[in-house]
Amino acid sequence: MIIDSTSEAGAPKRLRKSELKLYPSRWLMLWVFSAVSASNASMWIQYGIIGNIFMRFYGVDSLAVDWLAMIYLLTYIPLILPVLWLLTSRGIRDVVLVGAAFNCIGAWIKVGSAAPDMFAAAVLGQFVCSVATVFVLGIPSYLASVWFGAKEVSTACSIGVLGNQLGIAIGFLVPPILVPNVDDMDELAHHIRIMFYITAGVATFLFVLVVFVFQERPELPPTQAQARARNMPPEEYSYVASILRLLRNRPFILLILTYGLNVGCFYAVGTLLNRMIIDHYPGEEVNAGRIGLTIVIAGMVGSLICGIWLDKTKTYKQTTLVVYFMSLVGMIVYAATLHLGHLWVVFITAGALGFFMTGYLPLGFEFAVELTYPESEGTSSGLLNCSAQVFGIFFTICQGKIMDRFNTMAGNIFLCVFLLVGTIMTGFIKSELRRQNANLSSKTGVSAKISIWFLIHSGHVTAGKTHFLWQ
Image: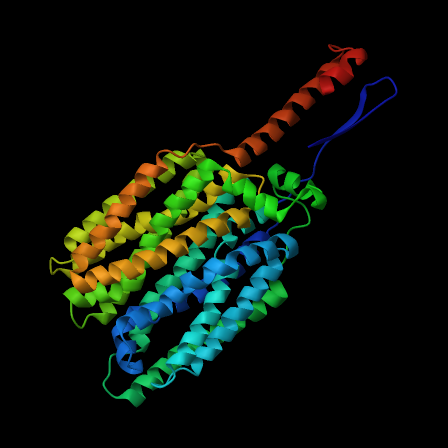
């Protein structure tokens, strides 16, 4: 944005570029948010990865344990629109603060569920934690846009997603270590209680950290696109109108469907991983957790690489399509090798699957922001996640039923079919990089006006032509 003033003769007196600034504290904001997201995500899968142990501990069937993970997905669907309204009306600090509070409360409720007759308390605690997910899951792209520059926004979004993936990795790794499959129920309850005390302590610390550290936004905007968004008068923005505009955006609707198919498959694989591994490798609960860890760690690497690649190339459509196709290939290879009897092969194929399937997460967020600018980044991300939760519940239930009736191969083929559909649909998404164009047009406008000023200053353009050229 250029601020100009002219003399009575029409010549410019001064030319000033609007102030943009990158604050070092942006990395602290990203770290605090990522830690809260990691804490919440770790509790999503901590039941499912040792599902056979909790089935015996609480005396429930596999579907009941699966619902302790799927409740995260179910809660998101009815609550996402109210939370998006809160994000647009109150801002990111209040949303993250409420999310951290729910995360803390839910973790302490679960401490009281460490007894065989307290399954209801486990469900309640997991439900409260699932509410926290609604407040944090769609924040990475919004936080990245508010705090980070145009050349680092995709990387920042990837790091925000990495926080969630790190939490899932912890949820895969730690429970099988802290809760061994012992026969004595009192000893088992003791181990479960220790696990819940640890998660509750971490959640409490992070809630306090958000209260005293996390900020709403920097004093000065980091990009021209963010400056434009700030300058929009409040009376010109309507939350309902924004949702309706997004639902009329055909490329974004296609992205909602394809994102839901891909991430829904990831949720199903994560929820049912223990059953898949135990079915072919009995007694390998710890390795099931390690395989889950491998999926997520490889995915974290993929997410970071994809984010850096987007910042350097801005090839959103091409990168998204390639990574989506490789997710399909990874799922096919994983399904074909799971039953071979070699755990080391499963580690490799699961890692390849995670690299692409989890690496797709920040791509979806950032592509959505580009397709929907200047709509709120939180709104577009929230709608993507809502689609993922719907498909995640559907895929988890259907794949679980298929595995019960047939085998794990049939269940994984079921997911491969939908990933193929998603890959084809991704190819039909029209790439319109609105945010990128906004930043480029601002730079082009600045360069043009500076050139005009130098022409005037050097006498090549008369003062009488100044006003016309300046427009």
